[in-house]
Length: 206
Image (cartoon, rainbow, N blue to C red):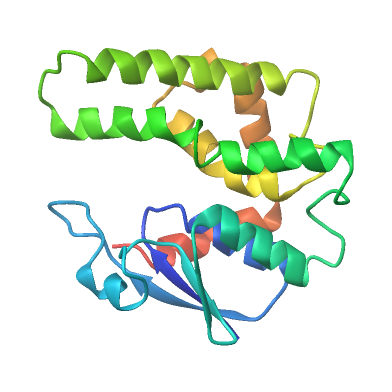
């Protein structure tokens, strides 16, 4: 059975969603953020040296990084679902979005969150985070024009990965600025497995 090391209010919720969609047996080992620092507890370092989540264990193999976990689970359990055929043009597009979510996409969002949480004035970082976040979200919003899902008009690993960024847009109160992202977010949230993942995440939160 797969074990998901899950940190509350983290990117591992999208892994719960994926596991629910795949219909595989799994168990959750929950961890709670420090109420003051909002950092992960030191216990996670016994699972992976970085002490971050999500991490899964499957047949004695420990896998970290959301993108790698998503690819692993879809390759092993997807049975042709949630990823285009390898070698196709759609797979290239899929791969780019899969990695965009944890590279170009997430960095400015995290910078904004860190600046807001710190509360101190900055000479450069705050403006940079705002500008880069707007650039990234405009790019995503434009890419969704005329689409339902990101790739091949069907739910794929790219959507699981990008769901975290969509949630951040909502947390920023910026959905009105990006109508295509707002519509996309509503579509993702309409999936029963997504709703179940939200419920499970709440059950494992403070």
